[in-house]
Length: 157
Image 1 (cartoon, one colour):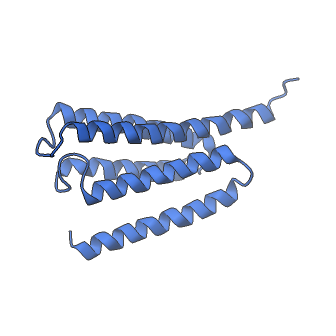
Image 2: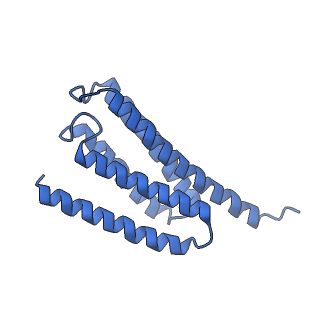
Image 3: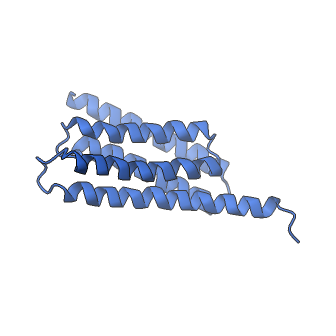
C-alpha cells in the first residue's frame, strides 16, 4: 500500500474516533463509567489499528495474518453501531473483542504465523495481553453502567 494512502487512512480513522468520542460523550453526560469504557475502547481500537498497520503484530506488517486485527476493529465498530452504543450491548462487544484477541493469538501461535518476527512468539503474547486488558476493562466499565442503570430502574426498597 502506498505511504500516502496509509497516512490518509490513519487520518480518516483518527477523525472518526474524535468525532464519535465527542458525540458519545455528550450522550453520556454525567456517567463517568460510560465515558471511561468508551475512552478505553477507542484507545484500544486506535492503538491496535495503528500498531498493526505500522509494524504488524504477527511477524512483520506484510504478514497476511495481521488482517485479522483489522477485522477485529471493524467488528467492534459494527457491533457498537448494532448495539446503538448502549452500555449493555457495548459490554458484550468489548468482551467479544477481548476473547477474539486471544483466539487470534492462539491461532497465530498454533499455526506458527509470524515466526520471522524478531522476538516471536513474545511479541504476539505481550501485545495480546495488553489489548485483552484494554478490551476487558472497557467491558467491565460498561458492565458497571448496566448495574447502575438496573439499580435505578428496579423497585427495590
